[in-house]
Length: 206
Image (tube, rainbow, N blue to C red; front, side):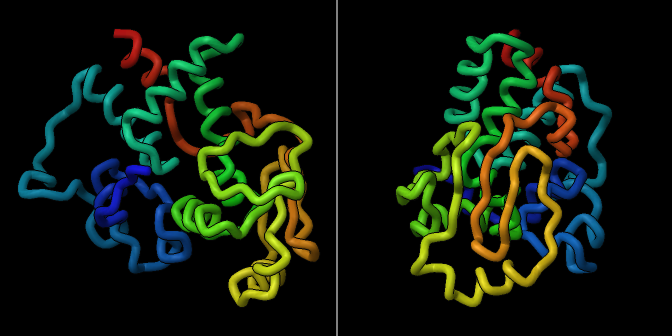
């Protein structure tokens, strides 16, 4: 599956805010935004005011980068969201939030979505007792996500079990058994990422 393989901090600088792509590093003084809070490139410090189209484009790029997606799959999620009942922008974010890699991150089993994606690809998780190694797998209400028995003893997951992690109220997590359950679909209020989804809808509706 195609994915972005360049420097993650460059993406944060391009969007002008933290996208929390590198986990714990984003909370330290080593964060690129804290050290160089301007866009990368030769003309990064001299960018002009954006047009309406520019604002819409940046919002779409920011959403793609938060969730680690390229254009084709992101557009596919939008088209699916359009066909669903309700508000398209909220449907889009809900679909992105219920990807398995994002759910693993939200449950506190990874320090970033990028790390969660890697852990899922390496087969460390089961959904309802069956191994799932597809990051884009969409979970449903009632699904149980659990660290595989063979992976529980690893140092990575032992550290997680000892850490106090805040999780959103649409999932329930047990760090003792290293498993979590999706108890509801996330509402817009549950999604704390700073995205103006209506701008994405406007862009794709041109």
